Amino acid sequence: GATIGIVGGGQLGRMSAMAAARLGFHVHILTPETNSPAAEVARGVTLGAYDDEAALRDFAAHVDVVTFEFENVSATGLALLESLRPVRPGRAILETSQDRIAEKTRLAELGAATAPWRPARDAAELDAAIAALGFPLILKTTRLGYDGKGQFPLPDAAAFAALDIAAPPWPLIAEGYVDFDREISVMVARGIDGTVRCFDATQNIHRNGILDLSLAPAPVAPELARAAQDLAARVAEGLELVGLMGVEMFVTADGGLLVNEIAPRPHNSGHWTMDACLADQFEMHVRAVAGLPLPPAMRHGDAVMKNLIGPDDMALCDAILASPGQALHLYGKAEARPGRKMGHVTIRFPFGALPGEAGISAALGPLARQRES
Ligand code: ATP
Ligand code: MG
Ligand code: MG
Image (tube, rainbow, N blue to C red):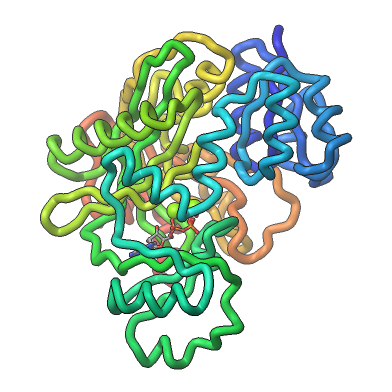
């Protein structure tokens, strides 16, 4: 079979590689990390930095098509890959998602609403941003943030006065604070022939800046769920996505949808699809990248996904294995550092039977007690 090249060795690459292997593809990984989660299940690995020309050339020589589980390859690295092999999704969408200012600019062009924002690339721009947006606001690094890292909330003028202007890692973006009702996301896949498939919207609950729980389907009105899928599809088409993309959104009190960010790769909030769908987000991703037709994003059950964060949640693995109905997915990471995503658990419910908060806590068992402690 053909070989799919995946840039990045983390758990998203691991689960993509497992889906690819199941469909008969070989997988070759590019990662700087020895013993990475993806390398453990791949046919081959190029060990090297993402922007190392020799490593990129070696990687490309082993593969028929290139995709990503880590989207922060430099423009020159992407250009080199693109000159050697088909790259899906393409360079433009990756570059857009790498930079929050470019991302929000593009979303506006596509008619997708976002939080109000201003560039804050230096102290003068930050002053102008505060004058325009007022408080409260959130400063974020324009690049490389994840799990809420690189964010600085500015609730009021006193917090701004206390900010050491030399401290933040410029350039930044300033975003108006959104007092959202809930956070949701939609995984959208788009094939080489332009076919778009959207999984059902998911509600996401964060803890310490890290995704903790995803509820599928998101318990929202059907019209809102449909509007979220339409929005994700519009963004995917506008960006000419080939592959899979997670679209994070805020639901406002008046039922409006604001796009928070996009991630042109499989997404943590789509992991429930592995246990509750005909074809999961990783199969959709692999199929789109390989140029295969996309099956419908058909869900056959309701699900709650709980992330396992190091080190405390790992102590519960035996209890999870002993609980029928809890599907355990471990990522093969040796070191359970604090805050590190080590695996996830999916709790499955019959179609249409997602319980409320108390029912979810009961089904989570020891995992629920852990998250409340
Ligand atoms: P991820 O791990 O999803 O990539 P990230 O570090 O890229 O996270 P964001 O998704 O932008 O950061 O923000 C993390 C979380 O912070 C959001 O899911 C949301 O809960 C909160 N947040 C971000 N921006 C805003 C905003 N403008 N108003 C209110 N809350 C926000
Ligand atoms: Mg992000
Ligand atoms: Mg996010």
